[in-house]
Amino acid sequence: MPKHAVNDSEIETCCEVMLQLRPHVQREKFVEIVRNQETEGYKLAYIEDNNTVVAVAGYRICSNLFMGKHLYVDDLVTLESARSQGYGKKLLSWLRNIAITEDCNYFHLDSGTHRTEAHKFYFREGLSIASFHFSENLKK
Image 1 (spheres, rainbow, N blue to C red):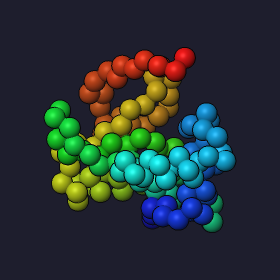
Image 2: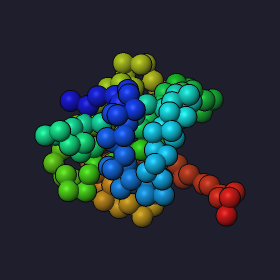
Image 3: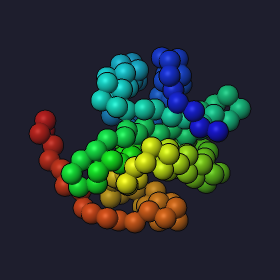
Image 4: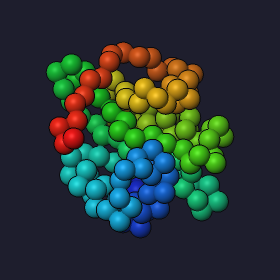
């Protein structure tokens, strides 16, 4: 069963898996970064199997004019050696249920254009491509 990372130790145990999705994040700053994001509504959740974190998700519930109240998944990753074993499906379902419980209008996420295997997973899980996401790196 997924659970929230509440203390620094639990957050730290999620780092190794998260770095597979976000390799640019500095390991020694991971807890600090998560704590800063928490002030903006971010929550970190994870699944353990045999005392090893195998899947991690970061999400937030917020509102905007376009979607109203929604749950946005910032990060969703399964340990490479544990993929295709149902952990991602379990975490995604758990997050979707939080969105329903919190009376959100939408449940959504972005996925890098190069992550084709993740896209297949999201399609299988009932998600669809709803829009293009445009960005510009301002710190080149």
